[in-house]
Length: 223
Image (cartoon, rainbow, N blue to C red):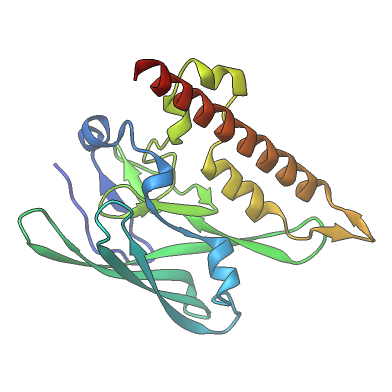
């Protein structure tokens, strides 16, 4: 049985094991709606002593249908969190309103300053997640971390030619590496974290090109 209570800062979202086993086991992170700390920072929504809001609109690449969400951010005495407000329509046309909060946590950076993380609000098999995450994905009714939703990257589902490219680097992994880059340069030199991100990004592009070429050749042989 699935129960989804409206969140307060002290509550969590409940998702049953059956839901994951049946529907979520092979979800791919690339195709999902997501919210990242990097995007919030770009939109200047992470300001101390401020309560801000912004709308996000997604367009489906398959149906061109649009969906939107309102995000409120609070870094005030009332707490550090984001509040997500959206309406979801099921296949029967029934609408359901969602309004819940996800806590934010800050950690110090090596070169000074600090960075924020989402605290995953999901509870799986009766166990609250609470993981720090740079990106939240919507693989069900609610946004949560990739671990709770058992997400994979589409290229991980390929075989054969994918082995040529080596161990696949997932988009969630790249997202987290990018979030870890607080500074690109320090004292005129490229930081280690930025170098690592660029190296992984370059490898990821090579992997995608290699697998795309393999799929193209495969279709060519069949037709």
